[in-house]
Amino acid sequence: MPSEPGRRQLDVRDDVRPEDPNAPPLLDVKDLHVYYRAAGRVGRRGLHVRAVDGVSLALGRGESLGLVGESGSGKSTLAKSLIRLERATSGEIHLDGTDILAISERAFVPMRRRIQMIFQDSLNSLNPRYTLADTLAEPFMVHRLAPRRQLRDKVAELLTSVGLSPEMMDLRATELSGGQRQRVNIARALAPTPEVIIADEPTSSLDVSVQAQVLNLMRDLQRQMGMSYLFISHDLGVIRRMASQVAVMYLGKVVEAAPRDSIYARPLHPYTRALMMAAPRPDPRRERQRRQAPIPGEVPSASAQPAGCRFHPRCSMARPVCAAEEPPLRPIEPGHWSACHFAEELRANSPDLPARPEP
Image (tube, rainbow, N blue to C red; front, side, top):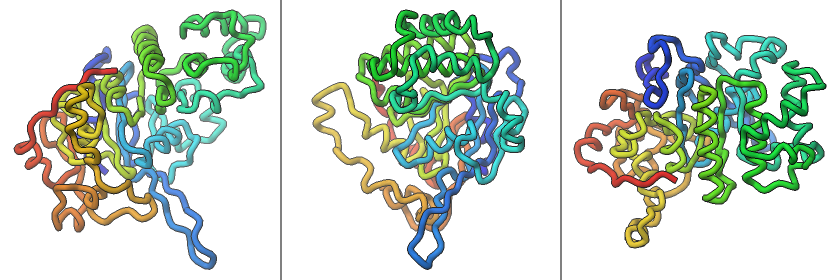
């Protein structure tokens, strides 16, 4: 587990300042582990899958934190565990001072309205048999936020708030475009007026033009309502646009955390740098000249993780110590943390990366 200063450095403080800078974080995750027992061969015990392996982070009121990493890094498992859709093996998740892992399901029900999630699959996360009115009225009924006679008015307000017409409330999800469905998902998350929204790849299945519309909508809603965002994506451009602080995950661990501008200009972990180099460039000539596979191999299985540094089998800087000792997440520069034995060497010898435009 990183030290307390290291954990608190994951806070986002750039875009929205809290009224009290010394106030405790709204969402405070401490040394969270989520392990599964995978099925093994007949006669053999199953293996532990360490999907999330000691993650700590904190998020203040009205702030945004971007979480980035390849598929299989544990991002979605972490997101689901924060709203108790996945059972955590150990650790703490404090929502405004209450450890939601230490209370019963009944006690957690009234807290669900304070932390909501926008899912990646905009179609499968909506009931195809429900109209939009049914879908958006449900949070009001579950949390007893409005009488039945007011539900259609509440639904109309929600649809308007996300740029959809109230006349659409009798349509079903299958009658909508991908962008419209994701707006409905955002509206459903907004219904109970949450304080924290966890957005798990909310634009990954959308066209580029629709992505920009949805991202602009989410930023406008945050300014209007003061919500906190944990924004999860494998798209570095999206993270750069939506978050002022970035944490990078690899095989269940946070390997680097820093302010957005710092981490994009000069990443201090080989994995983060490789991700940056792998991102497509808008200049066709530079895109043709760059290496096509800057990260060799694939993400190892979470049930058979390498010893030492988890990235060392794929790292161009790997040395014997990397296979023997796991590097801790530690400060390399003010506010910039890295879990690499040779982060100082990387800082000294690596030029800043060229800036890329946001989507």
